[in-house]
Every structure is written in C-alpha cells, then in structure tokens.
Length: 147
Length: 138
Image (tube, rainbow over all chains, first blue to last red; front, side, top):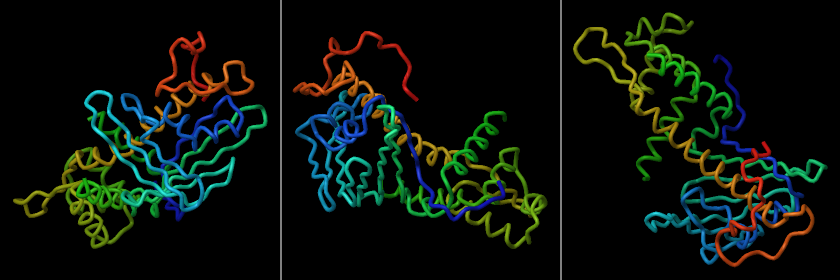
C-alpha cells in the first residue's frame, strides 16, 4: 500500500495456446481467422467487417455486431509495429489506447500470448502497475463486501 | 461516452495514489472527519485535505454540509464505474482467448498442419473435438 512505482500502468491479459507461434500469430492478423474469435460472447465479427493491413501505418478496423440486436461497434486502429511472428502493436486514436500483443514460443509447440493495453485512460497508464492497482481495488471491494 | 471516459480519467488518477486509496479504505468503515483521516498518516492536515479534494472532485467521496467538521463519506458508485471499465476489457479478452483456443483446435485437429478454413463466421460444431468439457490451457 505504501509503495509507488514509476512503471507504466496498464491492463495485461495472458493465455497459453496449444499451437505453434506462427499459427497463433497468423490468427491475429488474418480476417478468416479473426472472424472466429474477435467478437466476445454474443458478438460476431463478420469477415467482411474486418480490414487489416499488418504493417506499420496499416489499418486494423473491425465492426463487431451484437447477435441479439444487430448493434454495431466499430473500432479503428493503426499498426505501430509488426514483427512477425513475435509482436503486434496497434493504436486506437479515438480511445487513445495502445494494444501490444507479444507471442512467446514456449519451445514445446505451445505459445504464450500477452495482451497489454496501455494509455488507458491517460492518467492511469502513467500512474501505477495494474497488479498493485487491481489488488488494491480487490482488497477494497472485499472490504466493502463485509460492511 | 466521452463524458464517461473523462470521469474515468479523473477516477483512475485519483485511485493511483496509495494515500488516497488508504483514505477510501478507511471511509469504507464509515464516515470520518479530515482530522480522523489524517491520524494514521504521517502527513500534514493540509496534505490530507488536498487528497480529499481530489477524491471529492471525481465523486469518490462526498462531504457533509451541516456540521462544523464536514465528515467525509464514501460514494462507492464512482468506483464501480472504474471497476466496470476494467472488467469489460477483461471479459472481452477472456472471450477472445477462449474462442481462439477452440478455433486453433478446429483448424489443427491432429496437431499438425492447419486445414482450409470454413467460409461461415463460426466453426461447425460437428468439427469440434469431442472432449469439449476439458479445461483451458491456462
């Protein structure tokens, strides 16, 4: 509770996939793969709604469609960095958010993917690491629950 | 939407400070005056007052109007919005990872080369492996 850190604050999501790095990487940059998993539960991303040009300055645009009511969610990103098959960085200007995907070859046919969202929101990213932030919130919420 | 994001900026900025989080934790136990809040910290009253102003500004706390000491009170719904925002993204990536995991199994059912992709937006349920209730890989 007492420590502060100058480390960049960000949201981090990690998952290990049972597939080689090249395959997992391709899934993140090819519409015919993205369409299968990009929309969260209850939301689809039709293949024709995905525009992706994986090179620095290239677009990454999607329109997700709510399965229930047809509501559309557009997202417009631009690639900042593309290092096949290791790293993808894109930036969404409208929400001032940068997403960095890192693909780690675990050497046994599996791949670890890290998604890091930074600049989210502005002040938060320069403030404190997510771990410290979230655990504080967790403790805080747990405490509230006891009242 | 833009207004909400602005509110969130202020909320996250307020929460980024450990002293302010400690103040909120204390207020979760009940109302307190500035003097009472300052007690556990080795800080000048003025400094604590400044922290309280920040928390009040973004709506995380409110202050009583009547009494001389104007006790501070937690306003948890402001925090709820910040937590909701984080949870929304956590849910999106959890769903994407779950679906990508299934998709990877669909395109490489025998663990070797990938097969030509289906043309519809969703994997055919019949192509999925039979052990659908196995846990995730991480």
